[in-house]
Structures are given as C-alpha cells and as structure tokens.
Length: 222
Image 1: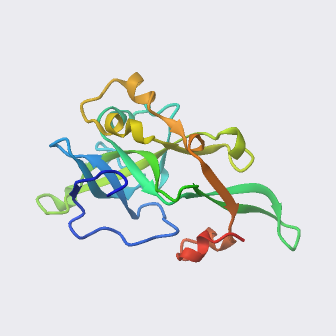
Image 2 (image 1 turned 180 degrees about the vertical axis):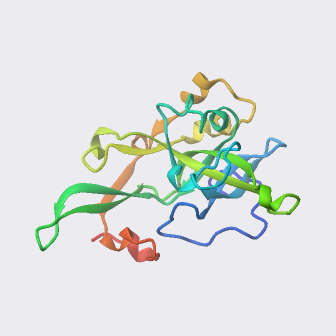
C-alpha cells in the first residue's frame, strides 16, 4: 500500500497470504481506482472471466493478454478501455528451453526475474466482474477476476523467453488506473515491457514446476 500510494484497503480481511508459486485461478492482490477516484487495494482471482461468459471454465486460459491485440480482442477490449489495474509481485518465473537433465533428456530451466531495488513489479492488469447465476442475491454473487498483460521480451531477456509481463511505470499509474480514460491509443502508450525497469534474473530449482511447492526457497538462486 505504501509503494503504490493506496489509501483504501478493500480486502475486508480476505487478503491472500504470501505465495511464492501463484497458480491460475487463485486470489491475488491488485491496485485499482475506486468509484470515488481513490487508489484502492483489492482481492481478485487470477484468470479473467468476461462479463458475458456462460461460466468460469475459460479462466485458467485467460491468465495473460497479449498487449498487441488486447484493445481489439473481444475477451479483453472492454476491460482495456475501462477496467485496468496493477498487479504487484516480487517477480515472476520464466522457463528457458534447450537444457538437458542428468539422463540426457531435454528440460526447461526456470529463472526468477525481479526488480533490482527490491520493490514490487507493477504489472499491467485488466479486470472483469462476472455475475454467477447460481448465487443470485448472495454476497458472493459477483466474481472479480483479472489478467496480466504480456509483450515481446526485451533483448537481454529474449534468450530466456520471447514474452514478458507489461509494466506500468510510476509516472503513469494515475493515467493507467483512471476509469475515465477510455482512449485506446492513449492507454496503449502507457504500456512498457518489464525489461524497461532494472531487473535481475537467475536460475532457480525445478521445485517451482509443481504448484504443490510453495515456499520462499523457490526463489533462492541455484
């Protein structure tokens, strides 16, 4: 809340605890602009469910949105125009192909990527509200979900993977979160690859490959 100048905690005591291996369809903390135009911390489920979806089955396939097509793709264009958020994280994992294990079999080497200064990475996100018809009139009728934008990796990270998260630099937080800013060209101009920030990356153990493993040890350098 301090880093992102948040003055409303809307998590209602339901904020998820620390996670070092966040899986699709689990809850994450996000920063949004409230209806009163104040910066707010909220809880959303990772994996976008558009308002027009019949059910939540697509959520696990909607954890990312490509920055190149997000303004026009039906699943994301509404949220891109009006419902944007920042998804803070200590960093992200990426897997590099071209390695072999001790038995000579091909494998992918996981890397952890994080800001050098130890702050949270301000990843660009979108969110949607979906009404669950089976819970009509109940407190949990509305499911709020989010997705993270990705773009082409910068040169220094391209050898690890060809995609990386999009970030919103601090000078653009107000504009990105502004619910009244709907011009797609102006919104798109705020997007930058994570590599625009000063990052460090290093190989980590393969325990991160299983979502059953979740401890700070996953982020330790090999």
